Image (cartoon, rainbow, N blue to C red; front, side, top):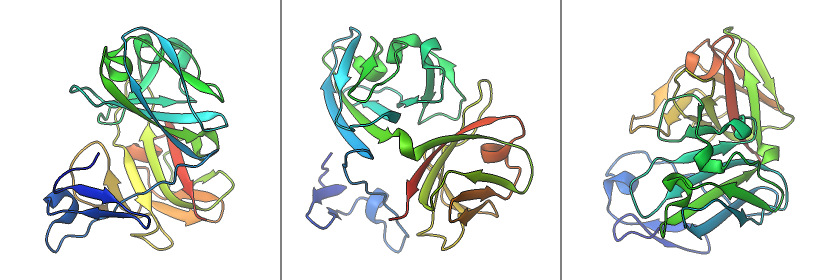
Length: 239
């Protein structure tokens, strides 16, 4: 969405910003994450809700791993679909919440996404009547999961070197921030964390080691490595 003093324009080489402090505060370090809309990686869909369960076509051309959906017309939480959750039982995460998985069948209509479409129920989060909804889809190939072990050497191997990871504790009844780590702010490690669910500044702590085939969790921080907890992990590969 273009804003007068926020993100003011997309260009062939990137984008431009205005004077809004959220994107251009004087002397402050700012980072942006920009994804290419590409088959078998990332897709964006726009829809107008009708409050009746329906399927929506997508252009990923492969299995869906994650969907981030937001009602653009009225104030609603971010809805998160993730392929390892129990979607049949209504499994749901919220990007603006620390809560683990909850069950609400009205959001995804208890239906798994396919290689050509996904389903929404009658919830205002994903299908509010006459509301504009945006859906951001990631391919299953970059969407992983793992179990925390509470040690300082939990190896998570997914077969490629990541440039950026998003991690969330998903176990029902637990809490945890949506953590973002990347190797732009930390060359060779992922020690500087940002959180998607709040406005906190960057925090630096020994946390994650970057490897050629994944990451190593170097702390028992419950946000990403509590023993017995399940975590989701979106890992954007280094090209």
